[in-house]
Length: 488
Image 1 (cartoon, rainbow, N blue to C red):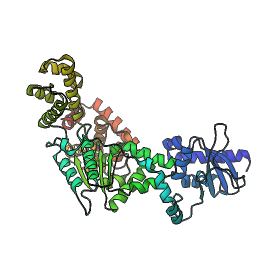
Image 2: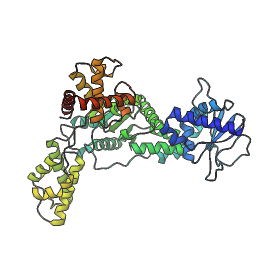
Image 3: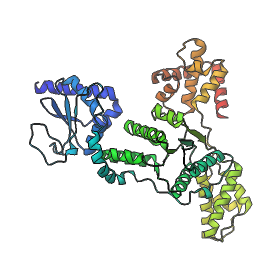
Image 4: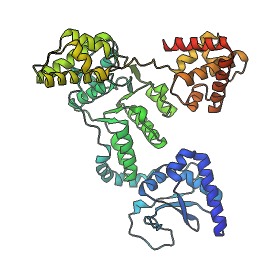
């Protein structure tokens, strides 16, 4: 093959990679992938960093080989190398090149996939058994959990109507001894500052006190650990250690990104549940609304106990404030807050517990710095920056679909179906329009929630209803009424 033909074939491979994997994946992982050499049935591709090399080898090598062979049918094996800033390859060699002193683990080849062949990333059983002890030891730092805060325990958790079920379930889980785990996975969801992390840490600390093996991770720590394990080629040890525990606690699961990381999270959840281990997960929304997660993972998370922690009511806000003030008085005996001030603060700070903590800190600062008595007037000045206008109600797409379906005398199933009759198409388009207007979901996400439709279908519906609302007064009033019903 001439150099010109080889360049054309390589450009064709890159185009097909871009088309099959998508622009985002291609730009992130393959934009700097270059063809370096072909020798016999082996081709060498290069990338500028060892991290890219490890990631492609661990997640995409078989896919790249399959696409590469469409342009180079004679190639049955790929080698990924790392090139230096000057362009020299520093971590792989072709079969006819002199041996290099680089470690063997830095070069990984993949033979052409055969039907029923084992995945390329799975090591031979004997080799895995020999490598496991050393790999586990080297992976200790890859899966260090987040530190626990001793203050976030059950004794300091203030229970109210909105969180009583979540608190009871968390206590039952942490005190459960022997037998199958309770409610695994236990899934908590709530807005910011409503106590999710407090309960997760309380469960973790109580089970650690009982001698159980516990790992508490935020989503970013989980992602960092997995990527770092791939980078250091200790992914097997990372997985084995993660699955050898009694309790996995994962906070802010909505932030888990990346196909491979999500797959590993799903495999870990399945492995722990099948092994009879306990999983506790928290997010800012229920499993069904975690659109970025794989559908199978969402289904597995929803298969246990799912509990929502609601907003703090007036009585609970009062009790939280009283508890925080009492804790401050232990260190600052002169800190005195009258009941009328507590009532005022609880009435104007309605968002979350963190803002209540901030209010107590500001009141303490006023006492410490001015030495004056805390009155309602001084409290008003001290916490002015924390008083927010009431946040609008968070509207769910499911609520929009149900309301529109009821209003137009059709079923929600009709709206999600492929039916194209006028009686169904109009309410479907109105529901799509309202979903775009009242939620933060993107067009592709809205399309998926309407029976897996394409984003262009949603865009067409939004533009059509926008035009009709401007031209038809009765439809405009109808849409405004639906908005008010959803927001009230």
